[in-house]
Amino acid sequence: MAARILWVAVLGFLAGVFLRSLAPMGLAFAGFVALLGVVALLLGVVERAKLRAGMLVAVALFACAGGIARMNVAIVSGDPVLTEHLGSRVVLEGVVSNEPDAREASTRIPVRVELLVEETSTTTIHAGVLIIASAHAGISYGDRVRAEGTLRSPESFETGLGREFNYPAFLAKERIIYELAFAKIEPIGEGARNPLKAASIFLKQKYLDGIALALSEPHGGLAGGITAGDKRGLGEELSATFRTVSLTHIIVLSGYNIMIVVFGLGWLFSRFHVGRWVEFGLGVAIAAFFALMTGLAAASVRAAAMASIAMAGKVTGRLYLASRALAVVALGMVLWNPYVLVFDIGFQLSIIATWGLIALSPLVFERLPFVTERFALREIAAATIGTQIAVVPLLLYQSGAFSLYALPVNLLVLVVIPWAMLFSALAALGGLLLGPLAPIVAFPAYALLSYVLGVAQLFASLPFSSLAIPAFSAWWLVPIYVGMLLLPVRYGRTQSAEEEAFRNTKTT
Image (cartoon, rainbow, N blue to C red; front, side, top):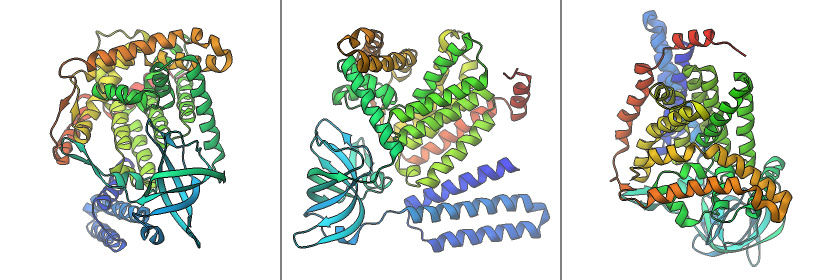
């Protein structure tokens, strides 16, 4: 019963956030939904035979009301003073709230604006603004800055193949509702900053400096992508190549990436008979390390959490526990920032890919007896196939691009990713310590990264490497994912069987 209440509460809350994200619903409506929950509970009390059903319905409605209310509270509204200046050139002062996103042609700087500076007056305001400045702005996290540019509201745009990207909602999840375009920006002091975040960003930059000294481009850019989630060095052409063959996930440090590394290290640990819980602890430490290496970016922290859940499922062998942990973590993330449920494709893919790892990969593993378990090859193959099955429907809905070679490319590349990440990290260390001699230490990383680049470029050049799928209704995803959810029930082990298997396994 407790498990049912958990699932009903989680799904009810997510349903409330989902509905409020798509349509306006005030707190009064949330109260009405909660009132329906009271009615359902009273009906269950009156008819004792229906008490359990009444309790579950009541929990679902209470949770749904909570989701609606939480999303209402999270809605970001504009500053009335700034809104009056839309379309005009303004001067703003504030503090850089996150690491700037440096691109080839521009730098995008999130700023928590505090002052609107006019010729004769200064007005205190509170708003999130994305400042779009030159490519080499020289601005860092925590800087107090003054910027001048044209104030505008972000707009949705077409992504091709009949799909539209809700850019305003995407920025709103970071509490940003304005853009300052064509901006001139300068630092004017230091503002408040999170010491841990500042330290992790500093560590990340030093690490990337080491890579730059040890590896030339595009190898350095790829090394930075797979180990620190930094894809600026790849360039647009190579990034497009990775998108074509569905390899983008390896350059954004996903939970999937971290899990592949853990699988590889798990094989290594098994050679030394390391216990399962020691392996789990080391895996969590590795996930935390990678999160730090990315400057504690939200996506990387999420990836570390997802990888830890998948590792828990692998270590315990109990799908139902890992699934509940995934549900609780997803609930916590949406509770913290409700915008991510509907408007953050990264969050959606992270949740679905993790579910694929813990629920589908074990089923695939059992059906790959012809793949050797040496070097964790069968685990990596099963993880690749399981996650690909899970994420492809959502990717097709969001992007409309389908690669015929996605599975073989991922299988060919992911077997070397753990070692490419390891040797890339050693190359960065060599770059920081050895200077001109660093390329010698970096040769293993260079060779492995060359292989990854070669595979991606080869398959991207083949006919039908990317097929365009016309836009389709999101309702098609419902039966697809319901069917996937039933797969572990139909072909997997029951909860009691998992518990029995776990008891029969020697605990170390």
